[in-house]
Image 1 (cartoon, rainbow, N blue to C red):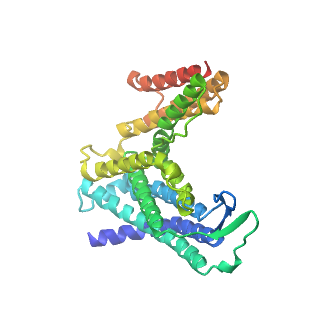
Image 2: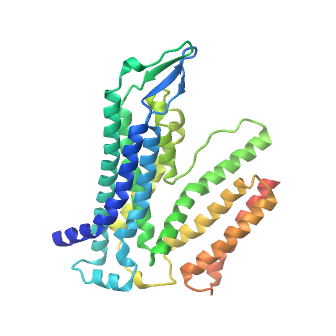
Image 3: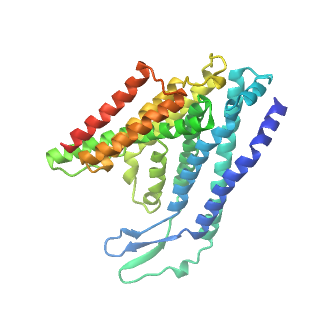
Length: 367
């Protein structure tokens, strides 16, 4: 076991250092350039301009999510080739045990790496913060420049948010990577899965909100309902509200989104860790995509079409043109996963059904 772990870590060392090195450099550059102060309106007492490490918070979640999406490609790359798969089969581990070992090893590397990268940037920012010359703060007739009141409980909250985001994104990505047979198909499945999680519920809610406003004339409500890594990114973009004492603000609309995304990540991890893979030579089978992959493909493209209807500005002709292009891409992606143009009736049904739903949605929005 120890020799295998050491050998596997050596194989992952270079890609891990390259990926995490890019994040570390970005964190350090942002920490060195982030503003330390904000302005307050003397008449109202409200903040006029503030940017407390906002870019650094957002970038940390985005980089952490991207790394968590990409790294499973290296973790489960033994499935992308017959020779490599045959080599791993000869190891003294049962197939499910091997998956668990590699899954946990990859998760630890990603979580520790992302935490270290963010901590280096944060450390530089804190050095600048505590050595800042407060006598240089400027007060005018209309505004007062203030140094941020650093509240560690919010910082701890963000670190937990970052770690949970990395965990959820890594687990969901690993679930789809593991059930594919080529790198390209795995990448496509992961992207479509995030599109499905992020756009499907969001598009439906926004469309319903727009129709409600059109029919009632009332003011639109700000509703965020997206269950992808975008939810933690939106949460990170609003850290400023907490640091300048503006309360929960938009966070109240994000608890459900972020929490659901974390639960999806936990479900994906538990599935990979506990469920036994009883299929024979899954890594060598082509033209037989796993059910979870088909969910990502069909759900992802349907979500893109619903989202396209909104981008079209409720113009039926533009919506139809966009949807025709998306449907054509949708068909060829299914051909790619099936490794052939001969699609059976049960394979055509979700394609036709998704296309019909998207076109009907465009017609309803344009009515």
